[in-house]
Length: 107
Length: 213
Image (cartoon, rainbow over all chains, first blue to last red; front, side, top):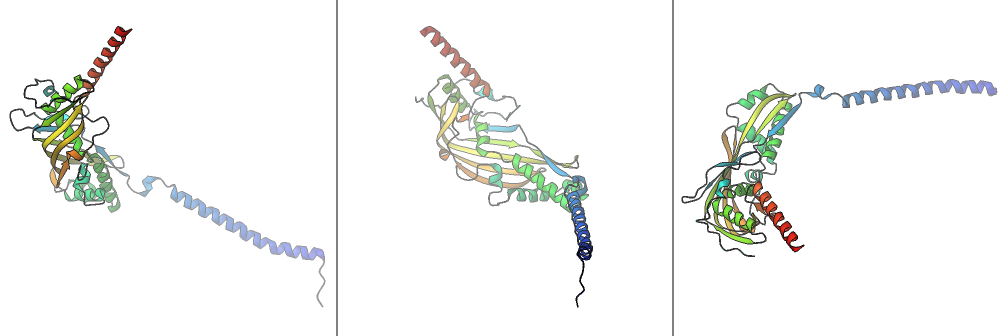
């Protein structure tokens, strides 16, 4: 014969079975939280912990040394071109037009 | 233009990874052991990172437009400069300049410094030299700028040096007639010449306007 349980006894038994499950859930949640914290710390670790920080800095040569050699006596000398450089050599442009082989212009 | 347009593209044209090739050249060109000594104290990964970053920066500063170097030389060319001055004095007029064979040499010496934790470790010096033989050049010049090529041939030899040692030399042929200059053309005169010409033109316009009114 199956013993008859009162409603109160059944409720107490159910509650007793519920507590271990809840404890397990809480433990799991705490574990996950801790794991999350650990991962986050690893990701956001300062760069200095990862090894030396290396970088390269370019120093472009703003001055291009240019030289024009023209067969004959009209050779131009070397000059530096580029930002910040002098306009040395531009005197060539202001010189006499003698010897120019420029053909007639077209409109 | 036939062939590569920039120095890096020409020097490392058969190689897809120009930066990787340059990193190798930086290490192999270190005859004096300057770089090796400087990097020896560092872990392997840091050493590689340093060389790679130096190569990245070097590739950027060496990516020089070859035609730009030639145009720099033309600014010193008497005949082209005279034609440019004349065209600047005659707005709207296009002049043709037939220029005799000439040779232009151009060089730059950029450098790249490798820093570790903010401290300067080593500076790698580069040398880029271009030797251009220009023949049968016929150009159209307007408003002081070279606006079109009718003909012309340019044989270029470009050399890259690292720490004073020549490491790569390449030749290229530029067919000038196939090149279309940018919309305004290549400037053949100093910037000041264009500013003065513009001022004169504006003054003339104002004078004409006053006379008309």
